[in-house]
Each structure stands twice: as C-alpha cells, then as structure tokens.
Image (cartoon, rainbow, N blue to C red):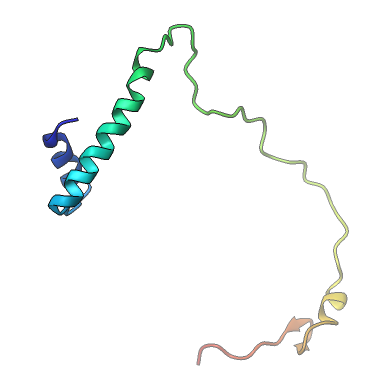
Length: 93
C-alpha cells in the first residue's frame, strides 16, 4: 500500500479525507493488507473455483394449497369494514 494508492482509492470513492483521517486510514489499510498477505502464498492449485460459498439446491418450493382463513373471520376483528373490505381513514385528499 502506498500513499498514492490511498489517494487513488479516496478519489475513486469521492472521499474527502483530512490529514488525520488519511494517516489513520493508511495505517489501518496497511495493517489489513499485511494481515492478509500470507493468503497470497497459499497453494490453491488443487482448489476448484467456486461461484458461491454455500451450495444451493433448488430454492423453489412445491406449490401446495393450504387452508386459508375466510374473509369473514378476518373482518371480525376489523374496527370498520364494508362489503368485505377494511375501512381506513383517508390518508390523501
């Protein structure tokens, strides 16, 4: 990490950094990159590339009919209703 790289990243992300913020960010990013550096030497030649970390099966479920509560049962608890619909105070004029 160089200071020029930090300037480029800040400009790309439209960040206006004070001198103190710039120094702090430079220090933190340098520490982060140093901590991640050992990963670049890991042997990944036997590792197959992956698109997703967790394997996904089908995310679709069976479309099954389930018993529904009737409109009359729902409207029993409504403070006001008319012809099968809830009545609510007007919001827009």
